[in-house]
Image 1 (cartoon, rainbow, N blue to C red):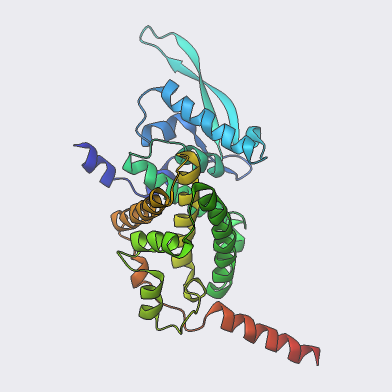
Image 2: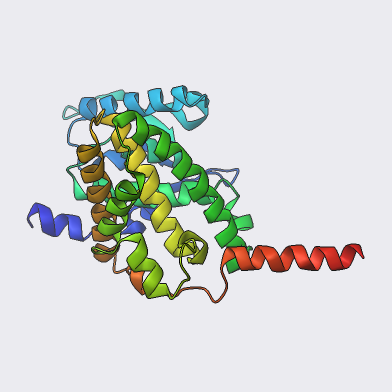
Amino acid sequence: MNELEKNQNYTNQTFEDIKHIDENGVEFWYARELMKILEYKQWRRFENVIDKAKQSCKNSGISVFEHFANVGKLSKRANNAEVEIKDYELTRYACYLIAQNGDSRKKVIALAQTYFAVQTRKQELTEKEYSMLTEDEKRFYQRNLTRKGNYSLNQTAKKAGVKNFDKFHNAGYKGLYNGETADDIAKRKGLRYREDILDNMGSDELIANLFRISQTEQKLRKDNVKGEKEANKTHYKIGKNIREVIAKNGGIMPEDLPTPKKSLKQLEKEKNKSLKKQEK
């Protein structure tokens, strides 16, 4: 089985299969099991990635110990002698950071980034809370995250030298939507002039775009991208990579996802109108 065939066998379920649940019902992953899935053969190389992930965690002001718990395991050698080897119990967030700092040339890394990013975003609410939201509530929640993400991305892009932000964002859309610009997406959705396309997306489409936004910011920072042309190329490439991952997983392409009947702006107006009536 060659490398490509091996990669094509990975799905989101792969990461679920190595997930553990402790006595308190808390999920975690063992670093050495994740190492094999992410196709690292040497622990020292994988531990370098873990160290970078821990530093990212620390830089975000989040407790490293809570997400990367040191655990020891006994391992048998050829002479039946037992030695203790280092391992970690990782939270979903820790796995996400490891994927972010992994070898981006590996297809399985892109899959891991998608899987852990989406689930980590959802867990800003608990899994139960998120699953109990209506589709429109999920849309509002994900739209709020994309708004914050775009603000942060714009700040990073500005530092990289971006001045034409319409062109920069269109590069990302073109990668994710198979060549479509923001205007093309708006026309396909039948929107009015200057109507916000993100306000007219379902939760799944918003999640795909949120991932495009967060991954692009990470890439611009990590690679210290300089120059508008390079930043645009990076945004396009990230969008295209995410599209490839969706295709590999047999998912629905963003342009094929249904457009909600009402925009979030419409829903917001209806909500405010209803509240005013109640006040009277």
